[in-house]
Length: 358
Image (tube, rainbow, N blue to C red):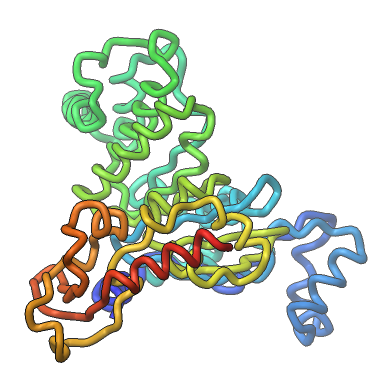
């Protein structure tokens, strides 16, 4: 069993989207009560909407996010990825379908209860930082805590801890205009984390930054997630960023979800040419791990009794570059050191060469 599959069995579902549609146009929301609409298939609904001049931002989107999972929604501009995120946050109401957080339906919730959910359970980070210009970094981070009713002393204490967490200790008195783009985004991240959200929504948070700063913030997000284990939905148009960060990726096109899976699933089995074009530029060596390509087996097979034991989360690059070339057989183990599969050096080279030939 793959590591992510085991995680999904252990950790409960935190958030789910059930047949979510977002349609823009006059009276679009009235269609849900139309008997003819209810009898239509997905394809018929899509065709009917477009023939009648409606814009379909999200079409029949269904997925679940597990507690502690970093789930990426990836697509080009206009694919519907940010629309889905805004529907999850209820900044836009879904036209049809539902969004559930901890089993509670958000789209049927009264506005006061929804505001309370946002304050207590959700944190949001957007591309444009959204900092209050006449507030210092510390004041920006403390602001949502004060809105929630915390005392100034408690809010500032938490804000200082968040500044330290994102590597900005000593910069609490700086105003946004005195901070670089990367520092401003760190303040935005610290502000969203200050409320200790159970669900963290990030909409292209690094896309406005230069490549070096972007890579650095990706590293910091990976480190933060390793410590905090938040349930994260991260939106991006960059497939390399998606495979670097994600436990699972949903790829969108024209409002539809065209494939959902682990980075390895997308690399090894792209659903169509659209997905294949994205994965073509991604290095299998750096993304694929041993448990992605091993032959599952809880017992050590014949001929592998002297094989070296390797952790299932080792990348192919680590395996091929760091190990002695004379080592040709590997027993793959889980985090407890128990055998869960095996492979050979020839298996690794075959997977890499298949990627290079695509």
